[in-house]
Length: 597
Image (cartoon, rainbow, N blue to C red; front, side):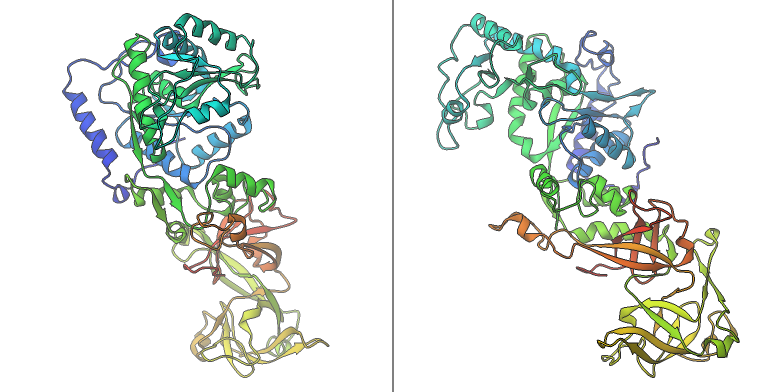
């Protein structure tokens, strides 16, 4: 898979680019190669050898405990994009340090979505796909070194005691009563933890830093805990697992990452990141230069939630149909909805990277989506909410009710190479319910008794009335064809009309289920007020209607995108669409508008 080309017009000047360009210039002035960390025994890609001093390495390090969402797309595009733009390498690495919540399902889904966005972790003829569990042996050795050096200790306080003794922003923490044991005692205890001699939660390994530090993250953070859980990669080899904040810096160092780029919530973790790597380098376990962490503001999209807890709640409580529900901000959901990877990448690139968290209105993403689909989505006519139109003078005009009048239109008005699509008129067609009003409002130019309008690509018709059932409900619209007014013929302009109506022939229309999706929430920032975020779900976020499509869509394949003329962009559902049961999802309307049809 090739890495997507970069549109220079979307390339923002960001502080991260300035940092990288500064570093590349400094590295280029150095006479000696920069040798990065890793001993030959840790993994094959850590073999000793110089790294090109002008090559950067970034990484995208998801935890495989859920599905990626739109916020992750920014980190993916940023890390892979910077590596691409500066001739570097980006690693895809799974931070799989929590076996209780991690599954192979998530690993596979993450890989699929990174590739769907257009990125590859292959470079220079080799794969750069890694996982934290590749380094568990090294991490354990590093922990034993920290204990021996008096930089870590085993704490046997209960979780509640540790929480209380940690203090808060206004109160310094209190040293653990186990903190000042000898390194030999702590090392023996740690090995007992490793060997399964203590129950889960009985003790943890902590860094020995400063319980009075104003940065609470430096108040002796936990490094290892006991968890008897089967790991999807290492099985039951371990019953102790490293904490994410301990494992992540080590992974960066072993993989020779030059620029460790993460979101702002990790800014307060950077001092521990530097403390840990510095001490391991001092002890000869890692080689300098060491990675450096840089933080950027995360992407927040309006009308969605990206909290893993809240997304899981939506799925598990049945508020959505699954992780790939087209209303979800997960990438699998957005893919099923019909969003294109190009539109997501362009939105991410254009919004830039800053040191502040930013809210982007959902309409911005839809704008990039329309711009992408406009140039490549084939056109088709569809009647979403149908009512039958009877052309009462059909036999009089054409000599027989069996006659079918051929019509055609380009598959795409700007792409003649896609050819023409063909369909036909008959004595009965489907039109939109909203295209008829028995008593029209001011400015209404479609069908009402006595008014003329054009059937697109067909004839001008004149409405003569309607039919209703015994309860007074509308069942059909009645009209007459105005002869010699067919589109594309000399008489097409003989009768001037203001209204143009899309239609589908009743004799050849394709019956389809159409799912009209809208934003999942009714407020721009759900979950940020006192109200329960579930109470802010949009009850109209999904409407399912039975519709009629022009015959050219009879062979539409799953994931095919179309512009339904007048209505917007739609996609054949990737899971449930089939020739025997066509299912189309609304991607977005032709223009911005809350709740637009």
